[in-house]
Image (cartoon, rainbow, N blue to C red; front, side):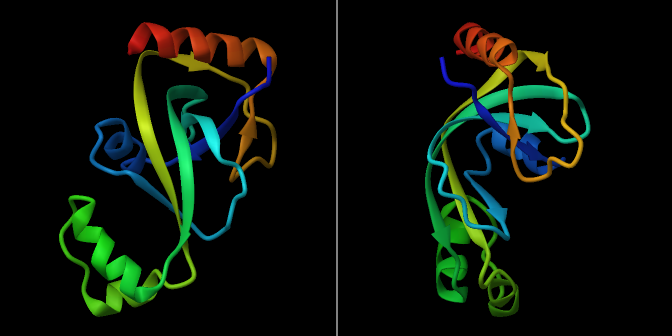
Length: 132
């Protein structure tokens, strides 16, 4: 079995994602990783959900301006949209919020991605099935 990659996400954004209110995780870096990912509540030492990372969109002011309200947020001002230029929207679908968070060991220096070990990956898959 392949190990899962996990994305650490700060509050309040992780809560919005788990509630289905936020579908894009905005990052300054492009990623080529597409597929299943685990979601980490930053600073908690726990995996709190899973999602499917389906695409990465490089934001322009026009895309940010048009899509922000489609995602259920208030419309951005032109200045706010301009601030997102050059950022990337990591599009998350099939989000599962865990009933019971899964502990993991956070490696030193991991910021954008955490590679979960095989044992933790197995626990994450099991909790995702229970939490559906």
